[in-house]
Image 1 (cartoon, one colour):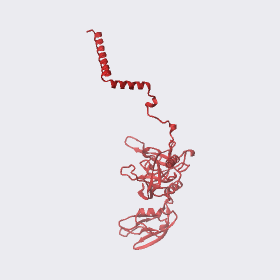
Image 2 (tube, helix red, strand yellow):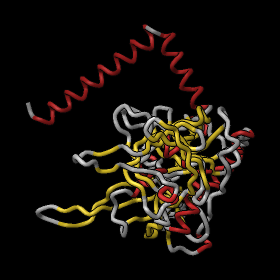
Image 3 (cartoon, one colour):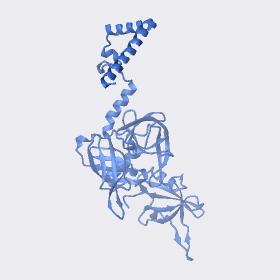
Image 4 (cartoon, helix red, strand yellow):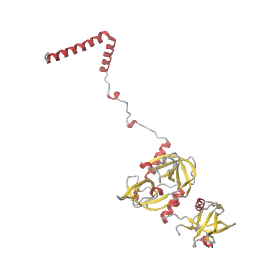
Length: 385
């Protein structure tokens, strides 16, 4: 059969099949066909508009959302305080057989202390970094190289300085840690995981906690908070509801290394005296006894090992270890207290000395053999030495 005739035959067969289906639908199922026709007629007479075909969208100008008073306070607090918060990145020198150079070693947070460009952060944020490769990024996105003014390992604090125009610097508002109470609202701003200008909120969950510093000595009086503090928040500010600095976020308690709802901050009153001394002297003027002491065995107190011959302790007759005739050592004095406050460990001594300033006089309580001896000494200073 010719191809053209074959094609015509197929067309006619298809047409007859469609026609049969139409007739069957029209006469065998009249109700369904009529319903369908009615529906088509309705649609034809009432075309669907574009607006009806799409979900309703309320124009932006129609939205009249009212923030709660608490939300407004939080928003205002963040907007006012965040320009003082900085992002700190550090680099360290890496040496290998094949190369020598700087690599990024860490990051953290900090905040502007004054218009002179001093920036406060944790010591552990810059520890191990190349001091010529510390960068501070301000909230406006500008980055400046920072120099290290000084630090206090015992308090995990460091002071940096950037050379930036004063109009770009908005210092933090400094409050006090004297009136902090458990349950009050707190706000942490920092750069957790490198995400800059992050706000977390919570409450003071405990006071007077004792944590360990980078130097291994205790930091007493730390603020405990449940505001989320994660890696990268270190060195950032902890604020009260008035936007004032009340602490510096320094560590978290977490087996995994991420926030578990327990963070710690160094009280602002400690920060204030550390920063003031570091800016003025390059280090903290800590009071010292002028003696080298050690814990040993079951002896209750601290054995005096040596005495600085230029110290007030030497002038008061404090005795250290002495050489015996047969090669051993003869025990001298043992420090058991200051002004009647018991001293048993080096941590006890450190925390007790924090109550005083260099130049003040204290009663040093000693055990000399089986006798109790009290001598008055004038406290020296780390700067003097």
